Amino acid sequence: MSILKELIEDIKQDVKKAGYEVESLAIEPSNRRDLGEYQLNDAMQLARTYHENPREIATKIAKVLENDERFENINIAGPGFINISLSEKYTTEFLNQMNEDVFSNIDKKEKKKVIIDYGGANVAKALHVGHLRSANIGEAVKRLAKTLGYDAIGDAHLGDYGRPLGFVVLEIKKMYPELPYFDSEYTGDFSELTLPITNEDLEKIYPLASAKAKEDEAYLEEGREVTNKIQNHERGYYDLWKKIVEISKADIKQVYDRLNTEFELWLGESDAEPYFEELQEIFESKGLLVDSQGAKIVEVAEETDKAPMPPLLFVKSNGTLSYETTDLATILERKKDFDPDEIWYVVDSRQGLHFEQIFRATRKAELVRNDVVLEHVGFGTMNGKDGKPFKTRDGGIMSLKGLISLVKEETLKRINPDTVSEEEKDEVAELVAIAALKYADFLPYRETDYVFEVEKFADLEGKTGPYLLYSTIRMKSLLKKAEEINAKKIKVLKGETEKNIALTLLELPTVLDKALDSKSLNDIAEYIFNLTSLYNKFYAENKVLTEENKDLQESWLVLTEVVYKVNNLLLDILGIKVPEKM
Ligand code: ARG
Image (cartoon, rainbow, N blue to C red; front, top):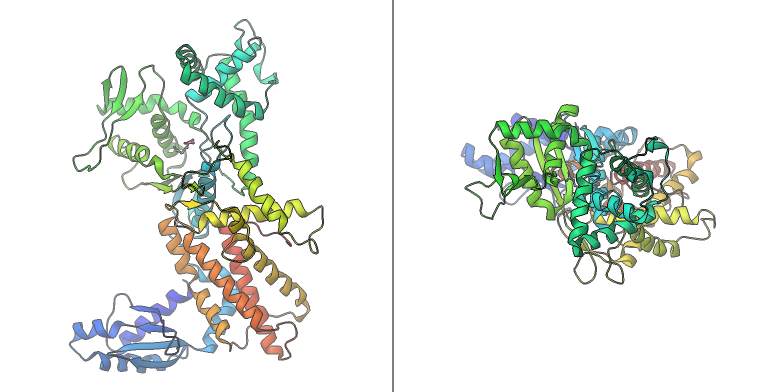
């Protein structure tokens, strides 16, 4: 149990000893720190239940608390507020405990199995800024869930199915009609062929083909046919598709690597294909499929709907399967392979309707137990200064690689040439750039849009990733310089800033819980900034290395170590790597 929770449980017992029962304690950090660090507000409520005077109740409770050596400066204010502060002895004790094991101050949750669907990159298409937030938030939420004891499995759920890829194959056919993939006589092994096409080519072919399909009806029809051929595993077409997926996946992996995003599963929409038949049988047997102009749909509207809820398209009129159906089949696949308790989809909020449709259809068809949680963890967009999704200077779609380069240009300027050599510079600038991008992405609540402001994100001062990295590296270097002192325990804790750091550390489990509940990283982002700023204030106030009082010096070093450990833990949850220097 976390330190604060334990403390609250004990205070409850103290209230009981004073003769009163409370279910949950009304305790909160005080905003009048001169009166006390925490304020206990239960006496007023108890006065109503027990028909006694609140001040008298407060006096009785305070008497019991006075015998607890963890508290000091107990006093009663107003009608019956009890102010309490934590004693120096107790504070040093729990800081030492945290130094031994940071996890001793984290509340583990019930061990649930959760699949987190994030990433969602599309094969043969360059990752764009839209994929940034899914990678950042998804990875961090997953790490947070794991830290809190969940069995969390991340799935990249690649967009490797459907019509766009049919067009890519079609366009390759037009460019290289002589390739054996299109030769029905060819009997060789396709997997041994090398394709004369790189990932860069693919990224150009994709927009070219979709533009053609928009203008040219015949091309569109041909593309549909090719899509069908792939979905029917027709020799040659299917093999070329597989090759494209392979080439593209290698590149997608590299970008996710740069973002420190690691998937346990690299599955795609197409991996649900073997489940389509069974899925269709389930929906059919429950009478859920309705014919509609050659297509099959599922009605998902409910009487209580306030907004229109269109039916879900199950099979298109030309026989191909829809994006919705791949998601439904994937639920079936996940159920069979993992039997998860929860599935979270970290996907752009603009896909809210899509997820509502598939969740409703899943319930109707009873694809999963009804206690399985399905949740769309939506997020807002990263916009340009014009308030629209961030674009390149000429108005095109900004690739994720391009975006990272933009930030890196800024962070490169801020690398200290005295500490980082010319050869190391690029690698450090990359880590700082990723930290800048990620941290800025976490600061707003996930559903809020924000504006991309590169100079602000990359700033070494202010609420930024680089500031956190810089400060954390400085803590490490202080600890390194003081290695010989061999600091082990906090013995004294006098200053106000030190006390504030301690009280902030007590809040850690509350912040983590809240972040997991909301599946948003904004509270963690604020918290690590506050903790780091407090630490920097302490650092400016004290000369740790030259301090002559050895007990004080040792205490300060251990305090530094605790903050350093918590920062590392939190940065790791956020998926931010700390360079050695910068
Ligand atoms: N590939 C999709 C896109 O780019 C996102 C996939 C999201 N995940 C899902 N299970 N539908 O829009």
